[in-house]
Length: 303
Image (tube, rainbow, N blue to C red; front, side):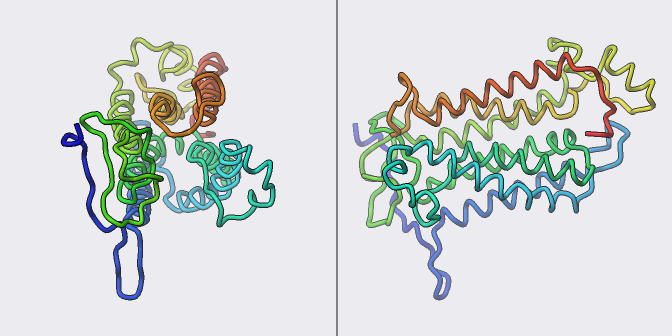
């Protein structure tokens, strides 16, 4: 059975002069850079089909910086919930940045909140920026998860299936017992997130929108009222902001499903803490869609 296991044999550290940098770190940095370039590209094209002015690229810099404190704070808080028993016994370690890490789920939610707050302060359209960020979010998460393969991080439970992975050689590898064939949980999450880009493009293209409630689409009475107010409307497309909610929901569904392959202990029935938090966030996202569908229309150029 081990003959079918994918074995990685490489040095996870690249040496550049006197510097030793992990390939995983370079992969994560590249993922973030590419995501920003994707966001910038969509921002430049954001007004082509709506008649609105393109989004300002300098605002993208402010929003990116604003996302950092929210990502760090909520990411750390969510990480603390993941290991609440340890931090209950060692409360001082929670504030020590050299110990532990951040929860990706908490980082995404926290970064979204503080970036949206900055957009409101700048009086730049929050919902349009959210749509621009939808594809960039999936690019960053997808490639970021795949980059974990370069460091041996994010392995799942022991498994001997045909696509199980293990790491040979001295490493250093990040996962415990890297030589044990395991679920490639990090790769599964990365591939799922990247597949979500197709899902977002299909929604943006419009062929499935006819099956969605009229209030979710830029059509019907909602669009008529905006046009009466002199606002341009891209009929037949999702209302601003819904692409980001769709991208977030897609990622959360995959995270919940792949979570059953993680090494994290179950805390609520068969679910681990991250899965429980993901379900809560997914419920909030769906609630936002429902509330947005019944809320009175607002002019598109406000947010």
